[in-house]
Length: 418
Image (cartoon, rainbow, N blue to C red; front, side):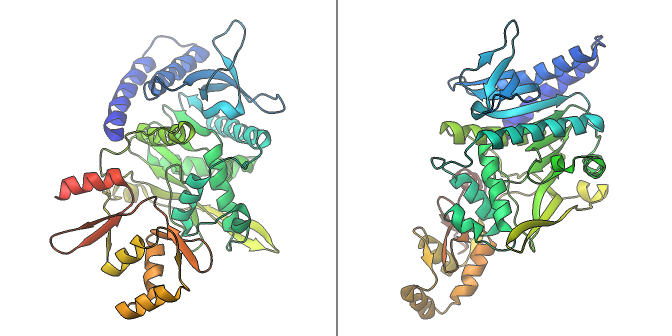
C-alpha cells in the first residue's frame, strides 16, 4: 500500500505546488502559509480518522513552560491549548509525534534557520523527559541498534559496557524512538541529490553553532524538491556499521512522500499500538551513504573522533542500482541454528557444541555469518538472539533455503517467485 499511496500523493502534491507557484499572490508570509496548508492537507490524508491524532500549527511547551519557536505543522495526540482568537495551539512536548518546518525554497539561510528550530525542539524534549523512563518499551530502538551493530544490549547498564563508542549510538537510537520526528520540507531549492549533499555539508562547515548539524541533533528527514536526506536510526531505516563507521545520514532522489509515510506510520504505530499495511512492493528505497561518524572510548568516555561526508559523483548517484528485497539464502545448518535461537543461544552450551561436532560444522564461523547478515545479534560475550521478531523459512523445489523476518515482504516475494 505504501508505495502506491505515496506515488499518488506525490503527484497530487507536485500539481498543487505548481499551481501555488504560479499564483498571483506575492506576499511572502501568505505564500508560506499556502505551502504549509498544502503540506497539512497531505499529512491529514494519511492519518486514520479513528485515531485521536491531529494536525495543527503552533508551539511546543516544555516541562518548564518554555515554548519552542513557532512550528509550521505539529502532529499531536489528543487535545491542546488553543491560542485565543487564532487557529493555532500550544501542545506539551509529550503529546507531539512530529514537527515540520516548511520552506518554499530550501537552502542557505533558510536551511540554517530550519536546522536551528529542529535542534531546539529536540533540546526541549530532552529537558522535558525522564529519558528514557522505566515504563517505556525501547525494543524498537534496541532492534534498530542490533540491525546496525550486531549487538543487542539487555539494559542501559549493559549498553554502557559496549566497546568502540557504541554506547553513544545506542543513546541516539533510544532518543530518536521517543522524541518527535523532526522534518524539514522544502518544495524547492537544491535541484539535485548531488547539490543537496554538497549544499548541506557547506552549511554545516560554515555554521557558527555546529551542534545543530551533529549526529544527535540532525533532523529525521530533510527534503528539497525530489531529493532527501534520511537519518538512519532504526525508525524504520538502519544501515550496518562498517569498520566502526556509522552512516548517520543517507541521501535519496526518489519519492520523499514514501520516506515520510514510512517514518510517520512507524511513529504512529509505536505510539498507538496500531498496524499499517506497509509494503506493497519489493523495491527498496535507494539510500546512498552520505554523513558518517565514528565514536571511540577515550579515558573511559565516549568521544566522537571523526565526522565526515562520503563523496559520490552525480554520475555515480544516477547509476546506483535499484534493489529488490529478497530473503537471505541459508545453509541447512544456518536454518537449524536460527530456528533454535528463539529463546536465546549460548555458544558455551555443551549440547550446542556437541550438535555442531556431530553435524560437522564450525559453530563460531556459522554464528559469525549470521551476525554479519544481522539475523543474530550478541546479547553478551557468549549469548545471542534473533534480530527479527520471527523467522520465516522457505524451501524451493531446487533445494534452495531462504529465511527472512518481514512477513509482508516474504509474502510478496513468494507470490512473485512461486
